[in-house]
Length: 233
Image 1: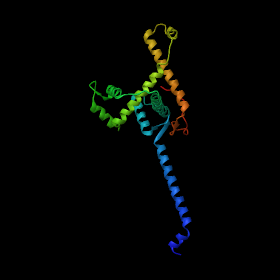
Image 2: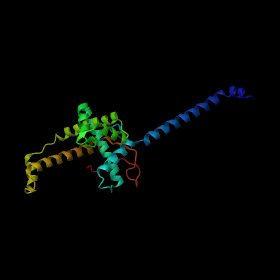
Image 3: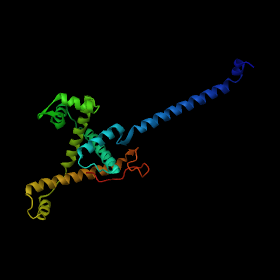
Image 4: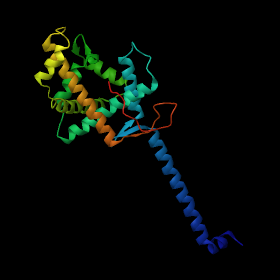
């Protein structure tokens, strides 16, 4: 029997085999894509991805800011990085919902006031570009990050300003110090602390509500699991 005759007599079977092979290759390709996509993500928070690249950059930044104390526990460090990035996402999204914005002037002012971008006490454009290139960051991408950060900070301020502290409460707390600190300085510090606690409580309640998806194991001795609430510095 010739090949052509065999194919003609069994065309339906051949067609089914071809379709099965095609479907298998398609599913394998999709599966590979999702495995790759997942490996590039650390977490999904409030509908936004935290990429592995962003996570590692934030980790390096925290280590550089705390260069005097390099004895970080890996789990603590990973969770601190996660919470830092998550707060940025959450407060930006909330700020965007209530119409908070950051215009070009605000973004420029922040960048120009940032010490690493200055030379002899003034903003230096060449230093700015050099640092961005060193960190493999594009100007547009970096300025978008600054814009989001400003919106997030505005949202934090919006929540914090809703905190009220009575004079009676301050007087009671101040009495315990027995005059060891100037009252106005104490009042300012006490109010700032109350605001920080309120923001921390708000964030922890919100992140518990949205239940972020986490794709890496922050504790190497355990299997992947959703983060429990941790203390936020």
